[in-house]
Structures are given as C-alpha cells and as structure tokens.
Image 1 (cartoon, rainbow, N blue to C red):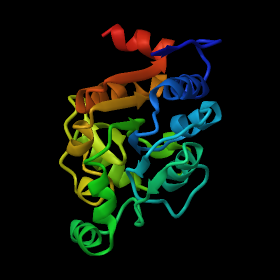
Image 2 (image 1 turned 90 degrees about the vertical axis):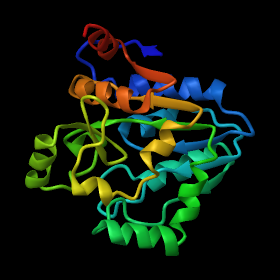
Image 3 (image 1 turned 45 degrees about the vertical axis):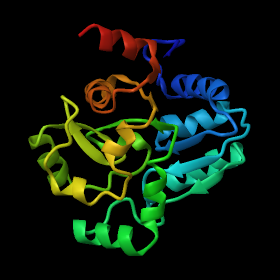
Image 4 (image 1 turned 30 degrees about the vertical axis):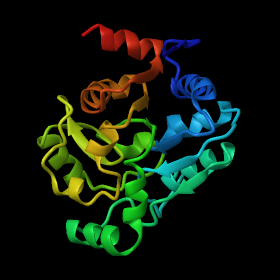
Length: 231
C-alpha cells in the first residue's frame, strides 16, 4: 500500500498513518487477535481508525518510563479501546538490566502470559526504526557508546528495540538479550504481518525489516516506495 505525498520533502508519518488507519478499517474483525508495536507512525494511525470490534490486542513491548511523546503501552491500550477489545500489556520496562532479569520477569511475574498470547494472534502491526531511536519521538535511551557498538555489529535499524542488520539478522549485541519484547521469531510466524514505515532516514532500516519480518502487507509512502524499488 503506497500513500501519496503532497510534497516530496514532506514528513510521510501522517500519510502513512492515514493509509494504515484506512487499511485497518477493512482488516479488523470481531474475532481478530492482533499484536501491536509502537512509534510515531502507528500513533498517527489512531487519528484515522474509525474503530469497531476485535477480540484481543496484545502489546509487543514493555513500557518506557521517561516519555516525551509515545509509549508502547499507551498505544496498545488506546488501540484496544477503539476496538472494544481485551488488552494484554507487558508490565515491565522495555529494557531490563540483563538477560537473567528478563527471564525471571517472564517466568515469575506474569509477563509470560502476555508473551504467550503472541503465539495466538492473527496479525501483528509493526513499525521499524533506524539506528537512532530519536525517530520514535522520544529521547534516545542509549549512549553514544552503545549506538557505536550496534553500528559496528552491523545494525541498520530496530524492531521493538531488537536491532538487526541489512540482511534482516538480529545483531550479536547484549542489548538484544535485554529487550522485553515478544520474541521476533514468534512475530514472524503470525499469519498476517503488517509493516507501516517510511521516510528517507529509514530506507536501510526498512530493507532490513522487510528481510527480517517478510511482511504480508507493507504500508509506506510513494517516495520511500520508489527508493526501495530503485535498488
């Protein structure tokens, strides 16, 4: 799905959000179970979603404490309310101290139930970000040192704070073991995988995300689409 732009230099966020909202209007059904990500584009789509009925909405990422504009839990809750659906949230920070803390939260603090729900979803709604997390609309939670390490490891973008390379492979960096997100392989098995993103600063990230997720539906703007097709 390609959203037109009034100006080639315009920020495509609203246009992609509008196209995403329009798509969801025809996609959602009373029995739909959907896992949702977050970010500026997905938040923008809420202004264009008419609502309706769905069975369940599952947040795919933990929350953020220092919020400027957007929070994964906020988006999932707002989306669930629009569709009068049950909502599963990840009651933990988006990033924890280490892999052991992550495992204990999943096993003993109820997070495992939310992640288990992702095994049953009919679709996932995702957006990708670049190496710099300023694109999410919030402050970058990582130091310049960590971002330099990610770049050295080959990272070109992130999906739910999981960083991947140009070939769509998760990079070998400890940060990926600390992210409180639904497992990426689980999301890749969802019957419908909707990826909504665009912008000149996300070309490399989008190519990697497409290789990683293999979306069944890609929603972007006309300039990004032309660039992606241009090789």
